[in-house]
Image (cartoon, rainbow, N blue to C red; front, side):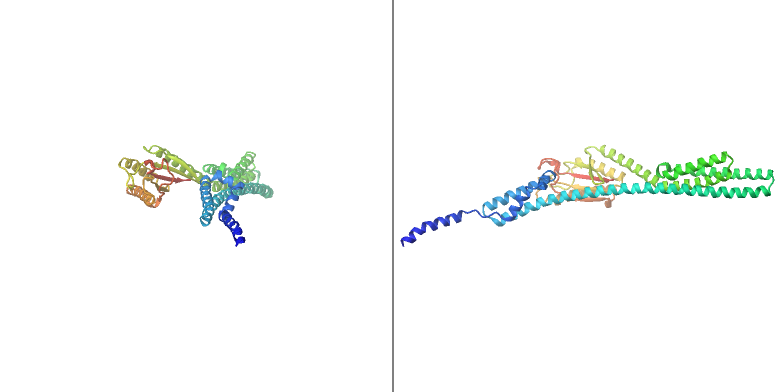
Length: 386
């Protein structure tokens, strides 16, 4: 009995120590804490502070739950925090991958351009060799013909024949001139430079041969110059037409931006998404609390935007609806969607084609003022172009 009495305090002390022992941290929380020590995490803090802030908040809740010995809750928050960090890292890796792909694409384009230049030089060399061969053959044939003529014709007949051939050569040179001028109408000097310059060179040689009374050489050079000029015109025409269309499109887009900036009550914004440009026309404070129909004093502004969309009828359009925090959280998405739809219906009534438009509600996202400010009760009309 005495032994038991001596042992009892020792047992009670041991139980007290066990009751006060701290529960070990769950592995999920340890993993999240270790992740925060990496270089990638520090980069994610700079690139995606919103996700990292959410991760820190989740870690804090996980730590609190662990300290309160709510292990399942701690695991839940630690896992959520880890997901937020991994999401930020995944977005960063995706961005790096896109940058690598873009760099590779540019390098490929450069290599292809170099290959085209080399191919053009090889083709030019081959053409020069072919020209020399044709010229030599033409001269041999002319000499053979001239020898035969000397035997058959008198001096007068030979002079008459030479004048006839010179006239024929003059005609061919004129045809080559016309072909070259035609190529210039589609800016072949810019869009089909090798063929255009080759045609110029050949035509100059044809003129020189004609001046020297070398009819055979002149005709040969003129025929080759005409062929090159026609090839230059054919190659340049689609590029010239595309450049012309691009210039017209750019001029139209500039006119669109100017007309949009002239609409009263709208401060135009520009945003770039990859290769797509966004012309954003926000109409702030456009709705009363919880309402989906635009305010009366905003109708004129929305009507002016509708007229702009009718005038520039080949640009895709997005109509985005938003709310402030004055709208109940459970209703924000549906109200914002209905606001965007109401504005789109106004545009359709003005004659804007519905199939051009995409309609989206974003609730109280992307606030442009304080949470409760009425300027957040708005629509944004986004016009897309390249």
